Amino acid sequence: IKTHSIHAHGAITDVVRQGIEQGIFIDEHPVAIADVLWASYAGIVLWVDSKRLLNNQKDFVKPTLKTAFKIISKGLKKE
Image (cartoon, rainbow, N blue to C red; front, side, top):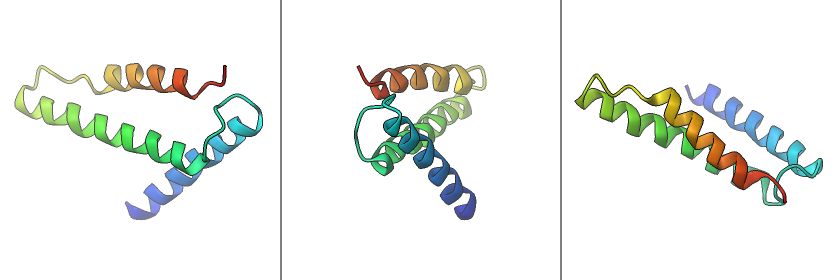
């Protein structure tokens, strides 16, 4: 898992760095942005999954992630 996490975080950082270089994303440190994205994803999955464990009817991982990334992508875009 650790190896895959490192690889995924590196891939996110590369995409963010490219977006900054192309003027698409805000000019912040790419690793810091990747950290925010990764932590947001992990936190949302853990939170929504824990709610599902309490009530199996509440399986909203995909729609919650979709909403979160809409919000995050708006904050990443350079004006």
